[in-house]
Amino acid sequence: MVFLEAEMSWNVLISPSQLDRKGLLLRKAIIVRLLEDVTNRRASKEHGYYVAVSQLKAISEGKVRELTGDVLFPISFTCITQKPMKGEVMVGHVDRILKHGVFLKSGPVESIFLAEKSMSDYKYIGGENAMFMNDHSKLEKDTAVRFKVLGFRWMEADRQFQLLATIAGDFLGPL
Image 1 (cartoon, one colour):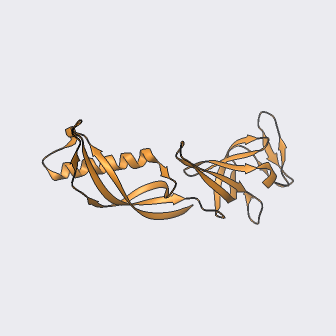
Image 2 (spheres, one colour):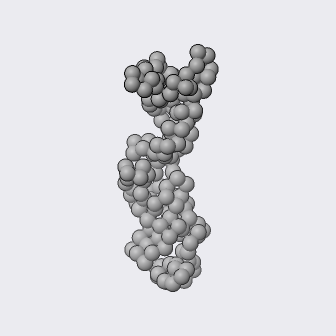
C-alpha cells in the first residue's frame, strides 16, 4: 500500500483529573489521548489506515464543557497513513478458502477477496483442508500470495476497506 503523510485536525477531550497547572503534564495527557484516539479510529475513507502520528503541530486553547468539566482541545498534527490504490500490487496471506474464492489479509487490510473467476487455471479442492490448485502451485491457508488490487470500498461500520483482487497477470500468484 502507498504510505501518505496527512495533515489532520482533531479535537482531543481531556478529563479534569488529567489537568495540571504545569504545562508538560497537560501536553503529555493530550499526546497520550491523541494516540489512543488514532488507535481507536483505526482508519478513515479519506486517509486510509492510520500508521503513526509523526508530528504534533499545534494545540489550540481548550474549551471547558460545562456539564462534565472536560476540556476540549483542538489540535493539528501530521500522521503517516496507508491507503490501498486500484492497480497496486500487494502481498498477502490466505486467511480463508471458500468454493467461490479466497480471502486474504495484508497488513491492516483484513478483507481481500480473490474470486474463483480471477483464478482461471486454479481448481477448487474441498475437504477439511480446502485449497485451490493448478499444475504448478496451490493456494491453501497461510500461503503468501502476490496480487493486484482491482478495486476497493470503504466500510464505515467496520472502519476498514474491502479489496477485490486478482492473480491474473505476470509475476502474480503464490510465492
